[in-house]
Length: 362
Ligand code: PEP
Ligand code: MN
Image (tube, rainbow, N blue to C red; front, side, top):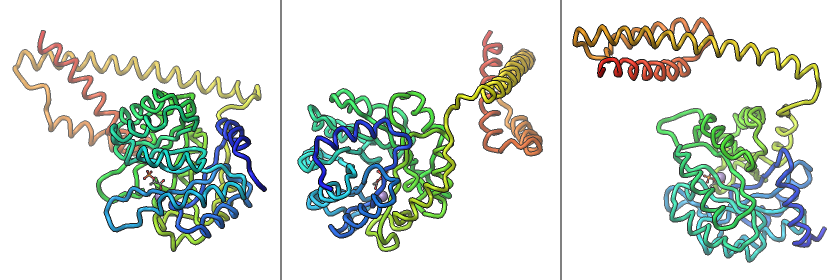
């Protein structure tokens, strides 16, 4: 099959609205043979929409494999022509944008280590001016939503019309289950703020290992992500970068078959009626919770009044520890996690302190 660039452009426009959008390919392009074989085996699954491959690899430490560089671009072009799969590559500098566009890379992505740096994002954005190419923007390595939003704005201001988001998790100190903590709540917040932008999950860089990939992919689908970008390799264990998290094209296809594809909404009337009833219940319960929280604040204010008269500090650590211990015990029986209890009580406590402070200052 020989692909004409004009056809690919209209294919990209279709893919932009395809759900789920599945992108896969090696962490890094290593050799022409590896790129060709991966692309062909991915295309043979019939389940992949776009080929990814890192050409320039930002590595934390020098001396690691930093990508084959521009010499890998013709391999990608050839892989596209053979399989019909559009290709996407990470770019971090103006020169890389220029080189990638010269070889008709169809979609560019900005990596997590670039999103974190406004100078680099601006350089890439400036290089994109006037180019009609979609750009996917990964979250920054640190959980700073403003940097991610800032990168979207910089790229949008450069005139890029098709922008998508990739959630690849956040660096966290200490050993955790994940290579990069997903912090789903932050990602969902970003998704809600940009409802028009395709929102893609990168389970490979979140997990850092293949045994928990499928669970993470399922979670993303359950959270109504628009697509997945998953690293695949013809010989994962011997990949030149990110070996532990890559899977073969065939294993990827198997995992995609195992996923339960849930829809955001269905049209059946019964389903809507049942859901509506449950939603009403939730509304009633939320109203009650608010009433009770209001009452709790009134009691806190009375305590504040008492503390003011007796010249006692607002914050009393021992009392706070007692409250939270009690809540952990009760919460455990009710199936509420310690993480939730801590967050909830921190918020309630802060609000109480603010109410008491007003009374103390009055
Ligand atoms: C990658 O996709 O291979 C990559 C380097 O990702 P990230 O920017 O998420 O670390
Ligand atoms: Mn990688």
